[in-house]
Amino acid sequence: MKRIVLFLGDLVVLYASLYITLFIRYGLVFRDQISIHLIPFSLLFILWLIIFYIASLYELNLSKNSPEFYSSLFTSIALSTAISVLFFYLIPNIQIAPRRNLLIYVVILTGLISLWRWLYNKILGQTFKNNTIIVGFNQLAYDLAKFLNRNPQYGYNLKYALDISEQAAFSFQNIDFKQVRGAKDIQKIIEEEKINTIILSPESYRLPDIIDVFYKVGKRNVYFINLASAYEKIMKKIPLETLNQLWFLENISRGEKKLYEFIKRFLDITLAIIGGIIFIVLFPFIALAIKRIKGPVFYKQTRIGKGGQPFEVIKFRTMVENAEPNGAVWAEKNDSRVTKIGKFLRKTRIDELPQIINILKGEMSVVGPRAERPEFVEKLKNQIPFYEERLLVRPGLSGWAQINYGKDLDHNDTKEKLQYDLYYIKNKSLTVDLAVILKTIKTVLSATGW
Image (cartoon, rainbow, N blue to C red; front, side, top):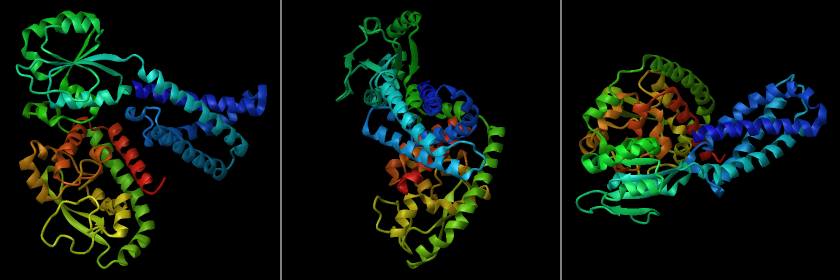
């Protein structure tokens, strides 16, 4: 809901800035200019909103009045302005004077959208909060409480955490809310603090006295949500601690969505063809740069795909030749095996570009879990429960885990990334795929200095 408010607010500001610009330029007769300006500017607004999305301006964790937020906002406006200039100068038959109009528009927009976002972050983003309590102490509850405590813009005003275990085995540290032992005062807390949302850990369902209290307060339109669902909804990943076989039967094993799979495959082929054009343009320069260092241009490696089927992934070589003389080794931060040109190719994800061949062959998709090597898959499926479930879909050039957590550095990161992969598998849709593609564009542009 908050993202929709942000989006609609930005849309209103975009059009309001246009109307104000026309009024400043043409006075009371500005209405005659609306029909001339409306269509070309509306096309631009679509691009502006996409750029805003890529810059994470609709992510709630960035909705703070901080230097990071305003840096993203002003960078997005600058990039959008540059595209607008090209639009007006390169497309013929647009009957407007872009130089002065666009300059006035950008100045007005920058002021209005900065004011709107400041007001949202300062006032609207902090209003209508859900007064919340968590019932039950455990590591999952702690992780969620810590996240909510650090990100008030999500709208959850965490008041209490209730420890209802027989022994106080867990304690929240450095958290700005009250901790209560036992459940005898729970009804009083709910009423006095005007609690709107109660997050329930599994053990809370086993206490009859608490259930009776919940039935009573439920008449006050209190919203109940179990801990695992709250964690997934807010954190956008699946907590492994709550998974069992029944969960997979209910949430994963629903069969493929045929229409979604058809459209996804069509988009894969379309984007792979576009990527192929980029590949042809960049290939001579990349090949020359790699050839300056001894060894081949391309690097092939066996990976595990959908259903556990192996395939050979194709990439630009980024490491020294014979980088693994003693077998498969996890990549490390500042890996000494990576060449200078390899660092650039990895940072910009250009090293992944040859995988368009794997996409066209149907071995990979544009969006999906990261394809892992068979040695690592065999090791990880014995260490991490449900690791093999990520093989239910085609691996991807980019994915929900990659944009939210980055690349693997060692197997300790894999458990965290698996939570994101399972979230993607459960919630896969064209909307999620588009979000991943746009955020991947941001990663590539950020790595090139944009």
